[in-house]
Length: 97
Image (cartoon, rainbow, N blue to C red; front, side, top):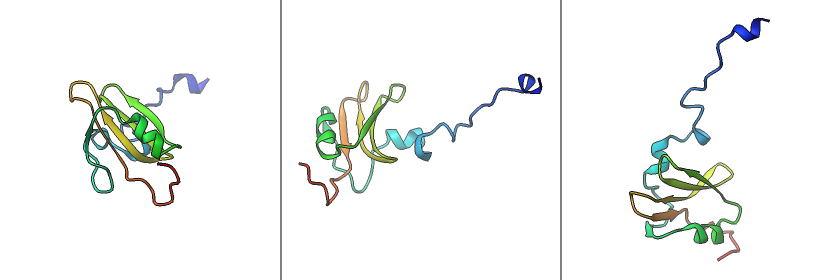
């Protein structure tokens, strides 16, 4: 049984990141094409505009991110940084709010 003696496979740090994004991409303020930072929770607003978006929480980073497929469409900071959020601008073909 040769396979049992082999060392366990470890994933490199780059492979563990979502869609090739680094931790700093999730914690820094997104740039052009995003709404300005707002106070409070953005969960309801993101869901109104991006109905297909799914939320992923990153507790070690104090961040929640919304992804539509592999595209980052919303980000919310919470915890010690204070609650604030931003979201990608509404697509032109969106029929929702």
